[in-house]
Amino acid sequence: QVQLVQSGAEVKKPGASVKVSCKASGYTFTSYDINWVRQATGQGLEWMGWMNPNSGNTGYAQKFQGRVTMTRNTSISTAYMELSSLRSEDTAVYYCARSTCGGDCYSFDYWGQGTLVTVSS
Amino acid sequence: QSALTQPASVSGSPGQSITISCTGTSSDVGGYNYVSWYQQHPGKAPKLMIYEVSNRPSGVPDRFSGSKSGNTASLTISGLQAEDEADYYCSSYTSSSTLYYVFGTGTKVTVL
Image 1: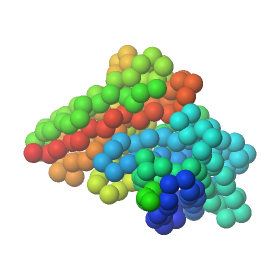
Image 2: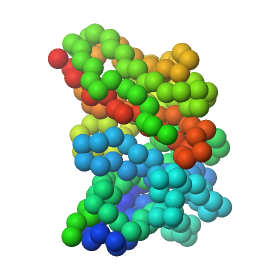
Image 3: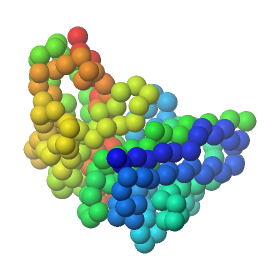
């Protein structure tokens, strides 16, 4: 069965960076894009960007350009999202999510369990 | 690019039907058949309920249906059940220069 398992909660100081991992299993990792979505407490969902695990190509929401980097290690079927220059407004649960198909799909059928990132001095 | 607009809350009694609207623009909802709907229970990850406007993934009950007219998409839940109480988010591909994908503001569904 398809699973996305994320790394554990993080507490970071303002200005620091955080790197969240997302380990995929139950399917061919390189066949489906991985997206990252975040949700502040009590707030809605916010799309951050996508990565093609096969090519390594990425696309980021302009809001995060210059601060976010999405990478992967295909040998261990794991995707990563690193966010730098953290501020208090980045406190949120971060989710990885798989695109529904291997082509032009704009929906996400499997999600990780979420990783809480807390930014506090 | 602003989030797609949804009503903050919708409620209904068990067995009734409810509809949640999702209003965007011609650059997103109105321009593409890439509208999706997600259900999220408290403390849980979102779950895909509808993709490409009206398609249901396997395992999603046929009580859930989606449609679109112009710049507004809709999710209808027929035969409302207690377990349908959750937050619902629409989403769409967007041709905005600032991002590829936009979510709605979210709707809290309450089963009375």
